[in-house]
Amino acid sequence: MNKLYIIKIGGNVLDDEKALASFLTDFASIQAPKILIHGGGKIATKIGDQLGIKSNYVDGRRITDAATRDVVTMVYGGLINKQITARLQALHCNAMGMTGADGNLLKATKRPVGKIDYGFVGDITAENVNSTLLYFLLKQNVVPVFAPLTHAAGEILNTNADTIASVLAVALSKHFDIRLIFCFEKAGVLKDVNDADSVIRNLNTELYQKLLKEGSFHDGILPKLENAFNAIRSGVKEVLIGEHSHLVANTGYETKGTLITA
Image 1 (tube, rainbow, N blue to C red):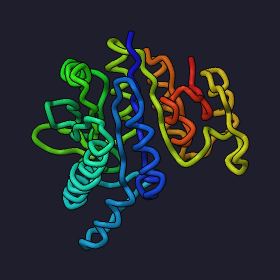
Image 2: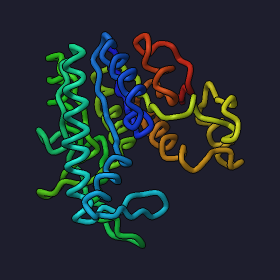
Image 3: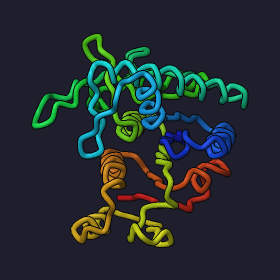
Image 4: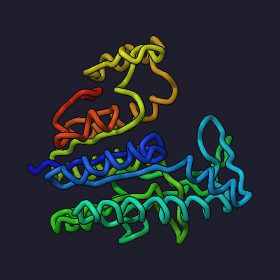
């Protein structure tokens, strides 16, 4: 099968103009079908503050009330998404910015209220992906650029970008040989969060479970690892986690981060 790159970038790339320019150049140079998913939480928080709409977090997760939902829709789906799309076009990469509502690409379920009411937040699975339309777009050499927004019952929903990347990878694994890449500020998954050189080069399920029981992982990396192993268990061939400059340059074959395998 043809290779498909699914790459997620977060605030560490978006907030650094030099890093973003470098990443977009590397991404545009990949000579294979590709999809980009971006976050943008810090930018949304900054603009929300300017509008007098304060961000509220519980255990590191944003509470998306109605006002916050409007802000993230404007910032994620508008400002960030269209800026990235325009810059990729300038690099001769035929990008198309989109949310999950466009073409019914990502239909979600609004998260039910439990101990915490997260508000307008969407949960998705691979069954929620319109993989037929995405496959068609990719075959037409279109490069989808996803904002972390889905939809349900006529409402836009804020949805974790790592989860979107993982779910897209699983849904499209029947059509492509997937390389799923999570770009973040570290060189890879660290065995010791205080030691930048303690990158785990290869992490399989057995080692992951062992280190998890030992409490080796920092809380911030756990959602990425959970999404990574969910993807591996569901048919995705390989997942990489690390700095974008190590993972995306030279068409992504220079594996210098952490390689996640079964």
